[in-house]
Image 1: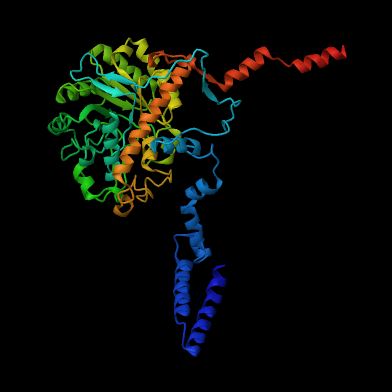
Image 2: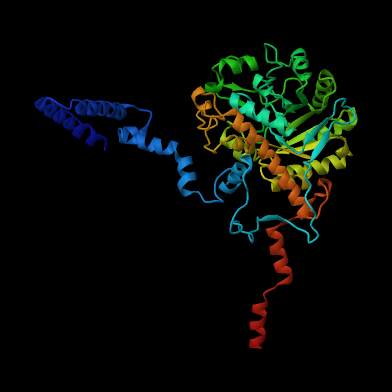
Length: 505
Protein backbone atom coordinates (compact mmCIF):
# COMPACT_ATOMS: atom_id res chain seq x y z
CA UNK A 1 0.00 0.00 0.00
CA UNK A 2 2.85 2.35 0.83
CA UNK A 3 4.60 1.93 -2.55
CA UNK A 4 1.33 2.23 -4.45
CA UNK A 5 0.46 5.43 -2.61
CA UNK A 6 3.83 7.03 -3.32
CA UNK A 7 3.89 6.09 -7.02
CA UNK A 8 0.27 6.55 -8.00
CA UNK A 9 -0.15 9.53 -5.72
CA UNK A 10 2.48 11.62 -7.51
CA UNK A 11 0.95 10.68 -10.86
CA UNK A 12 -2.49 11.81 -9.69
CA UNK A 13 -1.16 15.08 -8.28
CA UNK A 14 0.76 15.97 -11.45
CA UNK A 15 -2.19 15.04 -13.65
CA UNK A 16 -4.66 17.20 -11.73
CA UNK A 17 -2.27 20.16 -11.82
CA UNK A 18 -1.91 19.82 -15.59
CA UNK A 19 -5.69 19.69 -16.07
CA UNK A 20 -6.26 22.67 -13.76
CA UNK A 21 -3.65 24.74 -15.59
CA UNK A 22 -5.08 23.86 -18.98
CA UNK A 23 -8.67 24.76 -18.06
CA UNK A 24 -7.53 27.62 -15.79
CA UNK A 25 -10.00 26.67 -13.05
CA UNK A 26 -10.52 24.47 -9.98
CA UNK A 27 -7.01 24.98 -8.61
CA UNK A 28 -8.28 23.97 -5.18
CA UNK A 29 -8.49 20.32 -6.26
CA UNK A 30 -4.75 19.81 -7.04
CA UNK A 31 -3.88 21.97 -4.03
CA UNK A 32 -5.89 19.68 -1.75
CA UNK A 33 -4.45 16.55 -3.35
CA UNK A 34 -0.93 17.95 -3.00
CA UNK A 35 -1.47 18.54 0.72
CA UNK A 36 -2.84 15.01 1.17
CA UNK A 37 0.09 13.56 -0.77
CA UNK A 38 2.59 15.55 1.30
CA UNK A 39 0.97 14.22 4.47
CA UNK A 40 1.17 10.70 3.06
CA UNK A 41 4.87 11.09 2.27
CA UNK A 42 5.46 12.22 5.84
CA UNK A 43 3.46 9.23 7.13
CA UNK A 44 5.46 6.83 4.95
CA UNK A 45 8.81 7.92 6.36
CA UNK A 46 7.99 8.66 10.01
CA UNK A 47 9.02 5.93 12.48
CA UNK A 48 6.56 6.12 15.38
CA UNK A 49 3.40 4.57 13.88
CA UNK A 50 3.61 1.35 11.87
CA UNK A 51 0.01 1.64 10.63
CA UNK A 52 0.60 5.08 9.12
CA UNK A 53 3.94 3.98 7.72
CA UNK A 54 2.33 1.08 5.83
CA UNK A 55 -0.98 2.79 5.05
CA UNK A 56 -0.28 6.52 4.57
CA UNK A 57 -3.26 8.80 5.27
CA UNK A 58 -5.69 5.85 5.38
CA UNK A 59 -4.20 4.82 8.73
CA UNK A 60 -5.80 7.87 10.32
CA UNK A 61 -9.21 6.26 9.92
CA UNK A 62 -8.08 3.50 12.24
CA UNK A 63 -7.16 5.99 14.96
CA UNK A 64 -10.40 7.90 14.43
CA UNK A 65 -12.61 4.85 14.86
CA UNK A 66 -10.51 3.72 17.82
CA UNK A 67 -11.09 7.10 19.50
CA UNK A 68 -14.88 6.84 19.17
CA UNK A 69 -15.11 3.11 19.90
CA UNK A 70 -16.72 3.61 23.37
CA UNK A 71 -19.48 5.70 21.79
CA UNK A 72 -19.90 3.25 18.89
CA UNK A 73 -20.14 0.42 21.40
CA UNK A 74 -22.81 2.25 23.41
CA UNK A 75 -24.92 3.51 20.53
CA UNK A 76 -24.89 0.59 18.10
CA UNK A 77 -23.78 -2.62 19.83
CA UNK A 78 -24.48 -2.48 23.56
CA UNK A 79 -27.57 -4.20 24.95
CA UNK A 80 -29.46 -3.08 28.06
CA UNK A 81 -27.47 -5.40 30.31
CA UNK A 82 -24.13 -4.74 28.59
CA UNK A 83 -21.58 -2.04 29.25
CA UNK A 84 -18.62 -1.75 31.57
CA UNK A 85 -18.08 -0.69 34.29
CA UNK A 86 -21.82 0.05 34.43
CA UNK A 87 -24.40 -1.55 32.12
CA UNK A 88 -26.88 0.55 30.19
CA UNK A 89 -29.85 -0.38 32.38
CA UNK A 90 -28.13 0.94 35.50
CA UNK A 91 -27.01 4.14 33.79
CA UNK A 92 -30.52 4.66 32.43
CA UNK A 93 -32.00 4.25 35.91
CA UNK A 94 -29.67 6.96 37.23
CA UNK A 95 -30.55 9.31 34.36
CA UNK A 96 -34.28 8.88 34.95
CA UNK A 97 -34.01 9.36 38.70
CA UNK A 98 -31.78 12.40 38.24
CA UNK A 99 -34.35 13.94 35.88
CA UNK A 100 -37.09 13.02 38.38
CA UNK A 101 -38.84 10.92 35.75
CA UNK A 102 -40.53 7.58 36.25
CA UNK A 103 -37.87 4.90 36.64
CA UNK A 104 -40.22 2.03 35.85
CA UNK A 105 -39.38 -0.50 33.13
CA UNK A 106 -41.72 -2.41 30.85
CA UNK A 107 -42.18 -6.08 30.05
CA UNK A 108 -40.21 -7.52 32.97
CA UNK A 109 -36.60 -8.11 33.87
CA UNK A 110 -33.87 -8.64 31.28
CA UNK A 111 -31.59 -10.33 33.79
CA UNK A 112 -30.87 -14.05 33.81
CA UNK A 113 -32.69 -14.77 37.05
CA UNK A 114 -31.69 -18.45 37.03
CA UNK A 115 -28.00 -17.62 36.72
CA UNK A 116 -25.72 -18.47 39.64
CA UNK A 117 -24.71 -14.81 40.01
CA UNK A 118 -28.26 -13.49 40.22
CA UNK A 119 -29.02 -11.64 43.46
CA UNK A 120 -32.37 -10.52 44.80
CA UNK A 121 -34.28 -9.61 47.92
CA UNK A 122 -36.58 -12.00 49.74
CA UNK A 123 -39.87 -10.14 49.86
CA UNK A 124 -42.45 -10.69 52.55
CA UNK A 125 -46.15 -11.40 52.15
CA UNK A 126 -46.48 -9.06 55.14
CA UNK A 127 -44.93 -6.07 53.37
CA UNK A 128 -45.05 -2.72 55.12
CA UNK A 129 -45.77 0.77 53.85
CA UNK A 130 -42.52 2.57 52.89
CA UNK A 131 -41.45 5.52 55.00
CA UNK A 132 -41.20 8.96 53.43
CA UNK A 133 -38.39 10.14 55.71
CA UNK A 134 -34.97 9.45 54.21
CA UNK A 135 -32.54 7.52 56.47
CA UNK A 136 -29.77 9.24 58.40
CA UNK A 137 -26.90 8.01 60.59
CA UNK A 138 -25.01 9.68 63.43
CA UNK A 139 -21.23 9.77 62.94
CA UNK A 140 -18.99 10.50 65.91
CA UNK A 141 -17.85 8.33 68.79
CA UNK A 142 -17.22 9.07 72.43
CA UNK A 143 -14.03 11.01 71.60
CA UNK A 144 -15.83 13.28 69.13
CA UNK A 145 -17.17 16.66 70.28
CA UNK A 146 -19.11 17.57 67.12
CA UNK A 147 -20.94 14.45 65.87
CA UNK A 148 -22.54 14.72 62.45
CA UNK A 149 -25.98 13.46 61.40
CA UNK A 150 -25.17 12.13 57.92
CA UNK A 151 -27.36 10.85 55.14
CA UNK A 152 -27.20 7.13 54.44
CA UNK A 153 -26.03 7.91 50.88
CA UNK A 154 -23.41 10.55 50.04
CA UNK A 155 -21.05 11.80 47.34
CA UNK A 156 -17.77 9.90 47.36
CA UNK A 157 -14.33 11.47 46.92
CA UNK A 158 -13.78 13.37 43.66
CA UNK A 159 -11.24 16.20 43.57
CA UNK A 160 -11.44 19.54 41.84
CA UNK A 161 -8.98 18.80 39.09
CA UNK A 162 -10.36 15.39 38.36
CA UNK A 163 -13.75 17.11 37.99
CA UNK A 164 -14.47 20.55 36.56
CA UNK A 165 -15.43 23.62 38.56
CA UNK A 166 -19.04 23.51 37.34
CA UNK A 167 -19.28 19.83 38.23
CA UNK A 168 -18.13 20.54 41.79
CA UNK A 169 -20.52 23.48 42.15
CA UNK A 170 -23.41 21.32 40.93
CA UNK A 171 -22.53 18.51 43.33
CA UNK A 172 -22.24 20.84 46.29
CA UNK A 173 -25.48 22.68 45.57
CA UNK A 174 -27.27 19.37 45.14
CA UNK A 175 -25.80 18.16 48.44
CA UNK A 176 -26.98 21.33 50.14
CA UNK A 177 -30.55 20.92 48.91
CA UNK A 178 -30.64 17.20 49.71
CA UNK A 179 -28.86 17.57 53.07
CA UNK A 180 -26.10 15.05 52.39
CA UNK A 181 -22.33 15.44 52.37
CA UNK A 182 -19.91 15.98 49.53
CA UNK A 183 -16.44 14.41 49.85
CA UNK A 184 -13.82 16.83 48.50
CA UNK A 185 -11.37 14.19 47.28
CA UNK A 186 -7.69 14.53 48.10
CA UNK A 187 -7.24 17.67 45.97
CA UNK A 188 -8.15 20.04 48.78
CA UNK A 189 -11.04 22.42 49.41
CA UNK A 190 -11.64 24.64 46.40
CA UNK A 191 -13.95 27.67 46.14
CA UNK A 192 -16.30 25.43 44.17
CA UNK A 193 -16.84 23.20 47.21
CA UNK A 194 -18.18 26.15 49.18
CA UNK A 195 -21.72 26.48 47.84
CA UNK A 196 -23.32 25.68 51.17
CA UNK A 197 -23.25 21.89 51.09
CA UNK A 198 -21.76 19.79 53.89
CA UNK A 199 -18.20 18.62 53.26
CA UNK A 200 -16.12 15.62 54.20
CA UNK A 201 -12.57 16.91 53.71
CA UNK A 202 -10.27 14.16 52.47
CA UNK A 203 -6.58 14.32 53.37
CA UNK A 204 -4.43 12.24 51.04
CA UNK A 205 -0.75 11.39 51.01
CA UNK A 206 0.04 14.64 49.17
CA UNK A 207 -1.65 16.72 51.92
CA UNK A 208 -3.07 19.03 49.27
CA UNK A 209 -4.51 22.12 50.89
CA UNK A 210 -2.64 21.52 54.15
CA UNK A 211 0.98 20.98 53.08
CA UNK A 212 4.17 22.93 53.53
CA UNK A 213 6.70 23.73 50.80
CA UNK A 214 8.27 20.28 51.16
CA UNK A 215 4.95 18.47 50.81
CA UNK A 216 4.68 17.58 54.50
CA UNK A 217 1.59 17.97 56.67
CA UNK A 218 1.00 21.53 57.88
CA UNK A 219 -1.07 21.63 61.12
CA UNK A 220 -1.78 25.37 60.87
CA UNK A 221 -3.24 25.13 57.38
CA UNK A 222 -5.24 22.08 58.37
CA UNK A 223 -6.73 23.88 61.37
CA UNK A 224 -7.63 26.86 59.19
CA UNK A 225 -9.74 24.78 56.80
CA UNK A 226 -11.00 22.03 59.10
CA UNK A 227 -12.69 24.49 61.44
CA UNK A 228 -14.76 25.95 58.60
CA UNK A 229 -18.49 25.44 59.30
CA UNK A 230 -19.00 23.60 55.98
CA UNK A 231 -16.49 20.90 56.95
CA UNK A 232 -18.41 18.30 58.94
CA UNK A 233 -16.00 15.35 58.76
CA UNK A 234 -12.34 14.66 57.94
CA UNK A 235 -11.20 11.54 56.10
CA UNK A 236 -7.59 10.35 55.93
CA UNK A 237 -7.06 8.55 52.65
CA UNK A 238 -4.76 5.56 53.10
CA UNK A 239 -5.56 3.89 49.79
CA UNK A 240 -8.08 3.89 46.98
CA UNK A 241 -9.86 0.83 45.63
CA UNK A 242 -9.06 1.53 41.98
CA UNK A 243 -5.33 1.87 42.65
CA UNK A 244 -4.34 0.78 46.17
CA UNK A 245 -0.66 1.23 46.88
CA UNK A 246 -0.42 3.81 44.10
CA UNK A 247 -0.67 7.54 44.70
CA UNK A 248 -3.39 9.65 43.15
CA UNK A 249 -2.71 10.93 39.64
CA UNK A 250 -3.56 14.38 38.25
CA UNK A 251 -2.52 14.52 34.57
CA UNK A 252 -0.51 17.60 33.64
CA UNK A 253 -3.12 18.72 31.10
CA UNK A 254 -5.65 19.03 33.94
CA UNK A 255 -3.24 20.72 36.37
CA UNK A 256 -4.19 24.33 35.68
CA UNK A 257 -2.67 27.31 37.55
CA UNK A 258 -5.86 27.57 39.63
CA UNK A 259 -5.71 23.92 40.67
CA UNK A 260 -1.98 24.15 41.35
CA UNK A 261 -2.60 27.12 43.65
CA UNK A 262 -5.23 25.21 45.63
CA UNK A 263 -2.97 22.17 45.92
CA UNK A 264 0.27 24.12 46.45
CA UNK A 265 2.02 22.42 43.50
CA UNK A 266 3.62 23.46 40.19
CA UNK A 267 1.07 23.97 37.38
CA UNK A 268 1.21 22.04 34.12
CA UNK A 269 3.01 18.96 35.45
CA UNK A 270 1.53 15.57 36.25
CA UNK A 271 1.07 15.35 40.02
CA UNK A 272 1.43 11.91 41.57
CA UNK A 273 0.77 11.63 45.27
CA UNK A 274 3.17 9.50 47.32
CA UNK A 275 2.01 5.90 47.82
CA UNK A 276 1.95 6.33 51.61
CA UNK A 277 1.78 9.04 54.27
CA UNK A 278 4.82 10.84 55.63
CA UNK A 279 3.00 11.86 58.84
CA UNK A 280 3.02 8.27 60.15
CA UNK A 281 4.48 4.88 59.30
CA UNK A 282 2.57 2.33 61.40
CA UNK A 283 -0.81 1.61 62.97
CA UNK A 284 -0.06 3.48 66.18
CA UNK A 285 1.11 6.49 64.19
CA UNK A 286 -2.09 6.44 62.15
CA UNK A 287 -4.27 6.50 65.26
CA UNK A 288 -2.23 9.29 66.83
CA UNK A 289 -2.66 11.22 63.58
CA UNK A 290 -6.42 10.65 63.81
CA UNK A 291 -6.38 12.08 67.32
CA UNK A 292 -4.25 15.04 66.21
CA UNK A 293 -6.65 15.92 63.40
CA UNK A 294 -9.64 15.56 65.72
CA UNK A 295 -8.08 18.02 68.16
CA UNK A 296 -7.07 20.47 65.42
CA UNK A 297 -10.57 20.37 63.95
CA UNK A 298 -12.08 21.09 67.36
CA UNK A 299 -13.60 17.66 67.81
CA UNK A 300 -15.13 16.91 64.42
CA UNK A 301 -15.48 13.28 63.27
CA UNK A 302 -12.21 11.94 61.84
CA UNK A 303 -11.74 8.60 60.15
CA UNK A 304 -9.76 6.93 57.42
CA UNK A 305 -10.40 5.33 54.05
CA UNK A 306 -8.66 2.23 52.72
CA UNK A 307 -8.94 -0.66 50.35
CA UNK A 308 -8.28 -3.90 52.20
CA UNK A 309 -5.13 -5.68 51.07
CA UNK A 310 -3.01 -7.45 53.67
CA UNK A 311 -5.62 -8.33 56.29
CA UNK A 312 -2.98 -8.51 59.04
CA UNK A 313 -2.40 -4.77 58.70
CA UNK A 314 -6.05 -4.00 59.43
CA UNK A 315 -6.00 -6.36 62.40
CA UNK A 316 -2.92 -4.54 63.66
CA UNK A 317 -4.85 -1.25 63.51
CA UNK A 318 -7.62 -2.86 65.58
CA UNK A 319 -5.11 -4.09 68.14
CA UNK A 320 -3.62 -0.61 68.46
CA UNK A 321 -7.08 0.92 68.92
CA UNK A 322 -7.52 -1.15 72.06
CA UNK A 323 -3.96 -0.49 73.24
CA UNK A 324 -3.99 3.29 72.72
CA UNK A 325 -7.71 3.77 73.39
CA UNK A 326 -7.90 5.98 70.30
CA UNK A 327 -10.84 5.24 68.05
CA UNK A 328 -11.58 6.72 64.64
CA UNK A 329 -15.14 7.93 64.22
CA UNK A 330 -15.55 6.06 60.94
CA UNK A 331 -13.73 3.77 58.53
CA UNK A 332 -14.46 3.97 54.81
CA UNK A 333 -13.95 0.68 52.97
CA UNK A 334 -13.28 1.16 49.27
CA UNK A 335 -13.69 -1.91 47.08
CA UNK A 336 -11.27 -2.85 44.32
CA UNK A 337 -14.11 -2.21 41.85
CA UNK A 338 -14.10 1.49 42.79
CA UNK A 339 -13.62 4.21 40.21
CA UNK A 340 -10.80 6.60 39.37
CA UNK A 341 -9.96 9.29 36.88
CA UNK A 342 -6.53 7.85 36.08
CA UNK A 343 -4.75 4.65 37.14
CA UNK A 344 -2.47 1.99 35.63
CA UNK A 345 -4.67 -0.88 34.37
CA UNK A 346 -2.82 -3.48 36.42
CA UNK A 347 -3.76 -1.60 39.60
CA UNK A 348 -7.40 -1.17 38.62
CA UNK A 349 -7.74 -4.78 37.46
CA UNK A 350 -5.51 -6.75 39.78
CA UNK A 351 -4.86 -5.07 43.15
CA UNK A 352 -7.07 -4.87 46.23
CA UNK A 353 -9.99 -6.74 47.77
CA UNK A 354 -13.51 -6.32 46.32
CA UNK A 355 -16.05 -4.50 48.46
CA UNK A 356 -18.24 -7.42 49.52
CA UNK A 357 -15.55 -9.66 51.09
CA UNK A 358 -13.83 -6.56 52.45
CA UNK A 359 -16.97 -5.43 54.27
CA UNK A 360 -17.55 -8.89 55.70
CA UNK A 361 -13.94 -9.10 56.89
CA UNK A 362 -13.92 -5.61 58.43
CA UNK A 363 -17.25 -6.09 60.17
CA UNK A 364 -16.23 -9.43 61.69
CA UNK A 365 -12.78 -8.17 62.70
CA UNK A 366 -14.20 -5.10 64.44
CA UNK A 367 -16.63 -7.35 66.33
CA UNK A 368 -13.84 -9.73 67.31
CA UNK A 369 -11.92 -6.83 68.87
CA UNK A 370 -15.06 -5.34 70.50
CA UNK A 371 -14.78 -2.21 68.37
CA UNK A 372 -17.85 -2.38 66.16
CA UNK A 373 -20.03 -0.14 68.33
CA UNK A 374 -17.33 2.53 68.62
CA UNK A 375 -17.29 3.65 64.98
CA UNK A 376 -19.20 3.71 61.71
CA UNK A 377 -18.33 1.72 58.60
CA UNK A 378 -18.85 3.47 55.25
CA UNK A 379 -18.93 1.46 52.01
CA UNK A 380 -17.74 2.86 48.70
CA UNK A 381 -16.94 1.22 45.40
CA UNK A 382 -19.63 0.74 42.75
CA UNK A 383 -22.49 1.28 45.20
CA UNK A 384 -24.85 2.72 42.59
CA UNK A 385 -28.38 1.37 42.94
CA UNK A 386 -30.72 1.02 45.89
CA UNK A 387 -30.07 -2.72 45.82
CA UNK A 388 -26.32 -2.05 46.05
CA UNK A 389 -26.86 0.15 49.10
CA UNK A 390 -28.92 -2.45 50.93
CA UNK A 391 -26.46 -5.19 50.01
CA UNK A 392 -23.60 -3.13 51.49
CA UNK A 393 -25.59 -2.57 54.68
CA UNK A 394 -26.32 -6.29 54.89
CA UNK A 395 -22.58 -6.95 54.67
CA UNK A 396 -21.80 -4.64 57.57
CA UNK A 397 -21.84 -1.03 56.35
CA UNK A 398 -23.63 1.77 58.20
CA UNK A 399 -23.55 4.22 55.28
CA UNK A 400 -22.58 4.33 51.62
CA UNK A 401 -20.68 6.69 49.34
CA UNK A 402 -20.84 6.80 45.57
CA UNK A 403 -18.96 8.81 42.96
CA UNK A 404 -19.78 7.58 39.46
CA UNK A 405 -23.52 7.53 40.08
CA UNK A 406 -23.42 11.22 40.90
CA UNK A 407 -21.27 11.76 37.80
CA UNK A 408 -24.03 10.11 35.76
CA UNK A 409 -26.51 12.49 37.37
CA UNK A 410 -24.34 15.36 36.08
CA UNK A 411 -24.57 13.96 32.55
CA UNK A 412 -21.56 11.61 32.37
CA UNK A 413 -22.03 9.15 29.48
CA UNK A 414 -19.25 6.72 30.48
CA UNK A 415 -17.07 7.85 27.57
CA UNK A 416 -14.00 6.54 29.48
CA UNK A 417 -11.99 9.71 28.80
CA UNK A 418 -11.57 10.97 32.36
CA UNK A 419 -7.76 10.87 32.09
CA UNK A 420 -7.58 12.72 28.75
CA UNK A 421 -9.07 16.14 29.62
CA UNK A 422 -11.51 15.54 26.75
CA UNK A 423 -14.64 14.57 28.67
CA UNK A 424 -17.43 15.36 26.18
CA UNK A 425 -19.93 16.33 28.89
CA UNK A 426 -17.71 18.81 30.76
CA UNK A 427 -17.74 16.75 33.96
CA UNK A 428 -14.18 15.35 34.14
CA UNK A 429 -12.20 17.99 32.27
CA UNK A 430 -10.56 21.39 32.67
CA UNK A 431 -11.23 22.37 29.05
CA UNK A 432 -13.18 25.64 29.28
CA UNK A 433 -15.05 25.04 26.05
CA UNK A 434 -16.27 21.61 27.15
CA UNK A 435 -17.14 22.84 30.65
CA UNK A 436 -19.50 25.44 29.16
CA UNK A 437 -21.85 22.62 28.19
CA UNK A 438 -22.59 21.85 31.84
CA UNK A 439 -25.42 23.98 33.24
CA UNK A 440 -25.00 24.30 37.00
CA UNK A 441 -28.62 25.09 37.87
CA UNK A 442 -29.98 22.10 35.98
CA UNK A 443 -27.31 19.65 37.14
CA UNK A 444 -27.60 20.62 40.82
CA UNK A 445 -31.28 19.68 40.66
CA UNK A 446 -30.40 16.37 39.07
CA UNK A 447 -27.87 15.59 41.81
CA UNK A 448 -30.55 16.31 44.41
CA UNK A 449 -33.20 14.18 42.70
CA UNK A 450 -30.84 11.23 42.12
CA UNK A 451 -30.02 11.10 45.81
CA UNK A 452 -33.61 11.52 46.93
CA UNK A 453 -35.13 8.99 44.53
CA UNK A 454 -32.43 6.38 45.19
CA UNK A 455 -33.01 6.48 48.94
CA UNK A 456 -36.78 6.49 48.43
CA UNK A 457 -36.40 3.23 46.50
CA UNK A 458 -34.31 1.88 49.39
CA UNK A 459 -37.24 2.62 51.69
CA UNK A 460 -39.57 0.79 49.32
CA UNK A 461 -37.29 -2.26 49.16
CA UNK A 462 -36.94 -2.74 52.91
CA UNK A 463 -40.69 -2.27 53.27
CA UNK A 464 -41.28 -4.95 50.62
CA UNK A 465 -39.02 -7.24 52.65
CA UNK A 466 -41.16 -6.66 55.74
CA UNK A 467 -38.46 -4.68 57.54
CA UNK A 468 -39.30 -1.62 59.62
CA UNK A 469 -35.85 -0.02 59.73
CA UNK A 470 -32.36 -0.26 58.29
CA UNK A 471 -31.15 -1.87 61.51
CA UNK A 472 -33.12 -4.95 60.43
CA UNK A 473 -31.31 -5.26 57.09
CA UNK A 474 -28.98 -8.27 57.11
CA UNK A 475 -27.72 -11.02 54.84
CA UNK A 476 -30.81 -13.17 55.41
CA UNK A 477 -32.78 -10.61 53.43
CA UNK A 478 -30.97 -11.59 50.21
CA UNK A 479 -31.00 -14.63 47.97
CA UNK A 480 -28.56 -15.73 45.28
CA UNK A 481 -28.67 -17.92 42.23
CA UNK A 482 -26.19 -20.41 43.67
CA UNK A 483 -28.69 -21.06 46.48
CA UNK A 484 -31.20 -22.15 43.84
CA UNK A 485 -28.66 -24.60 42.44
CA UNK A 486 -28.18 -26.07 45.88
CA UNK A 487 -31.92 -26.38 46.48
CA UNK A 488 -32.40 -28.07 43.11
CA UNK A 489 -29.77 -30.66 43.95
CA UNK A 490 -31.24 -31.22 47.40
CA UNK A 491 -34.95 -31.47 46.66
CA UNK A 492 -35.18 -32.31 42.98
CA UNK A 493 -32.73 -35.15 42.19
CA UNK A 494 -32.57 -36.72 38.77
CA UNK A 495 -36.19 -37.88 38.92
CA UNK A 496 -36.47 -38.70 35.25
CA UNK A 497 -33.33 -40.78 35.38
CA UNK A 498 -34.68 -42.75 38.33
CA UNK A 499 -37.96 -43.38 36.50
CA UNK A 500 -36.13 -44.76 33.48
CA UNK A 501 -34.05 -47.08 35.64
CA UNK A 502 -37.16 -48.44 37.41
CA UNK A 503 -38.93 -48.98 34.08
CA UNK A 504 -36.06 -51.14 32.88
CA UNK A 505 -36.29 -53.29 36.00
